[in-house]
Every structure is written in structure tokens, then in C-alpha cells.
Image (cartoon, rainbow, N blue to C red; front, side, top):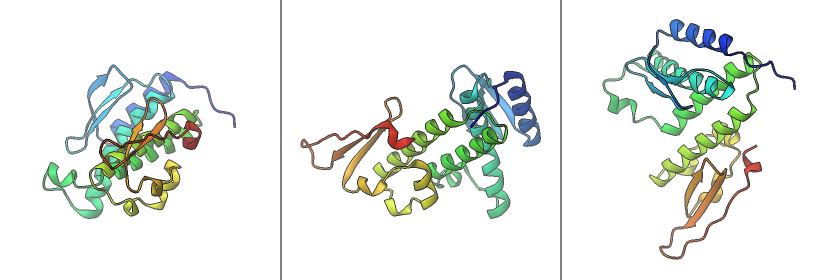
Length: 189
């Protein structure tokens, strides 16, 4: 597959248009490749789109705002931030990643590295939710297929996902008797 060469100016215009179209304000331009969305305020903290990765981060955060707007339209307004936070975090992240990937693919930019990062990020959010008593059967098949992880292997283990080293560590739940198993990064690809 041949991808279009990334163009910073085109990407900035695209982000500016989406921000205008969705009535979103940039609260702050981030200095790193991380972002943050403030859905109820319709504000984002995003990096400048200087490559496919930072462009994906911008799209991801805009996706959160769009997602909140879609939920309000379909299900009614939230009464508080607490109500917004009841939605499963990993599902919110998954849908924001899908929004970003949709736009990256539509523009024919190289989305493969960003997609790899997105899989790890969603998997990490699922591991956090699992540590907080998420029942694994609550993970939809769509999200399971995207992450390319056999979540059923997690049963009866404490799980830690390390985004930097592309590994998943499984720890037996028995105290002082823990083992680690590492999954090769190819499982995410």
C-alpha cells in the first residue's frame, strides 16, 4: 500500500477546519505528543500536527468531543461530570482511536504506526479497568478484534500493559508467588 507524504500545513488546516466545524477551542497547544479533551467545555489540549502520530493525537482528542456530542444527542444531556465518567474509559478511548484512524485512512496518510500505538493504548485502558474489577466478558468483540489480544488469558491474573516495551505482564494473584510472562510485540501487529 502506498501512502501520501505527510504535509504539516495540510494537516494543520484539516485540524483547524475540524475544530471550527465541531465548535471546539484549543485550550493549549501541547509540547509533547500527548493530548487531553475537555468534552463538557468543548476544549482540547493538542500538539501541533507535525507528523502522522501527532496528527492522530489531535484527531483522537477531537474525537472525544464529537463522541460526547453524539452521546448527548442520542441519550440526553449529562447532569454532571460524574455522570460522564460512568462510561467505561476503554470504550471512550477505543471510539476516539477509531475516529482518528478513520481520518488518517481517509487522507491516505501512513496510519500503521498510529494504529499500533492505538491498540496498545486501548489494551492498557482495559488492563486498568480489569484491575478495577471489569468483567472480561463486558469487552465487546469489536474491541477484542481491534486490540488483537486474547483477554480470556487474563482470567485469574493481575495484568500490566507496558506501552513503551510492547509487553503484557501477567502476575498470578497469589501474593509473593508472582510470575511474569511477556507477549511479543507481534501480537499487537
